[in-house]
Length: 215
Image 1 (cartoon, rainbow, N blue to C red):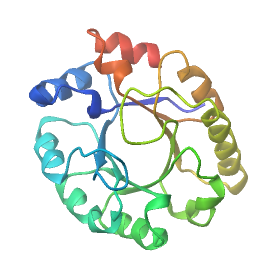
Image 2 (cartoon, rainbow, N blue to C red):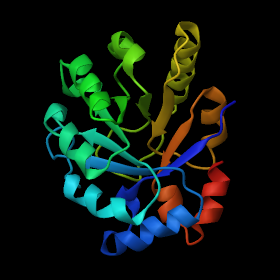
Image 3 (spheres, one colour):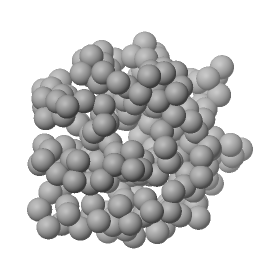
């Protein structure tokens, strides 16, 4: 079983002191920083753009894991790549041109990720599994932090892990939404490599303890 990577979601951070929050979770043992990018169209919320990613980048050595919950992902991959993203993930539901955009992300020097909403079947991405570096399984309906984990997501992770093994692929499996110390072990056992956690980390005073609990 691979090492479990923890990616604190900055959606749950205190944005009035974002630099300090980033430094705190980095010192606490985080592996990646997860940036939830929402445009108010694909999901009913509006969060951050490339300018915020670019502002964060100089203050951390951690990879920036940019999750684009936007209705026109092709428009935004280059700005986020230029802002310093290490991973750029787009939604399968957001564009009919997944192959093109995923290849563009790689050409820009970033790792390419594809994400699925809870109701979207794995069959929606089977044709691009050979060109992705990461598959993000949403375990809540995207748009807001602090939601309850959807239990069927665990089966989805296990099925995706089985497909990965069967086709000999090496993409990482990431899970985002309602992740906590109570379900992290089951998710890792099912095949998850990266866990995104917002409230489970940023609502705790001792972030190192919270990250250790997730692992």
